Image 1: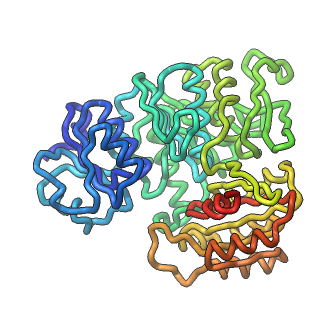
Image 2 (image 1 turned 30 degrees about the horizontal axis):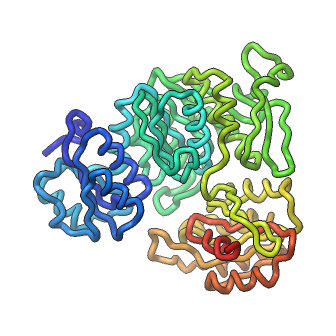
Image 3 (image 1 turned 120 degrees about the vertical axis):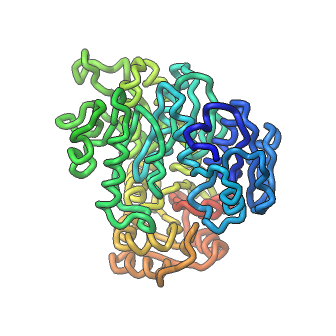
Length: 466
């Protein structure tokens, strides 16, 4: 049986269970670029699987133990794959080394001189994208793996051929603890994924382990707003750079902050040799709205400084960033109503997005929210209600179950009741068709409509603007 540590020592045959997923396909493409033989299975044909086929991968549709042939050296799977999966069972029966997606990514990252992992309950995709823009402005030919579609690389993956790699680091099932990097970023640490973690202390413990894993010659980049930040920074073997809005406690902070009519911040970051008011040549003007994106930009700035990238390329990269799909993404208009889509599916993310609308032109803010998973909705029900109450009017869709099958006795009606108790106008409909019909009748010229959630709620806005 092969050892997991040997996978990057020589090219071989690697099989991916669920190869069409956004993260799995990226790793498969990297191995193809390195000369590996790649095969895998997925539920159905897609643009992603067709692209992999064109690059030389052998794709099977449907999971079948017969797909696991004797020439396969390693099998890769995700947390969504259960132990009774026929391909995983066949691989174990053949004594083939099986590893998680995160374990493979960690072994790939180990080969890079500068490996960057971006962690946090939210903001990972945006911060990874911002820092990617900086690296590309610096022309250092980075390899990029991002959890959304980034316009400048026409997708979620860029294969570079240098010593730079950057990726999101998800805490779910502790997968980020398998990554091997020398620049680790912690954006925030909040309650989430409570179908895996016991409580916030369990989550904080995992992030502490992530911080401690930072290479001794590397840097931990951390937000000073994180509760009890010293818990994460004490006894570190690496260097630490803090970022935040408060200049009294943060090493990287903004000055001369202004917001335009679309809630996008422009600001400067004082350098060691400049006073707060003498940094105008390095003014950053973001194209994405909200204070939360200002913080994401500061995290990217701090990481870039740790790597040693000059200010001019940091400014150029941040100014180039124009957003990622499903992050306050303009979708169009219908009947004079502006439609925005946002991936927010945690109360903190909802607050950040709805707060950003305060500076965005609108009459009424409509939020069409699709809760994501029963466990998250039940655990954070009151927080969701308070966050959504920032909108003028709320429309709820059915809960998107994702990987869950047990509804735990919770539904969007429970959330509707909690929002009503706060005195807010809130509606619930079973189907997207009913929601679209209601919005066409009730939204007026000049309103701002945000479809929000990590499921397929985006379809509502897209149908309306069509």
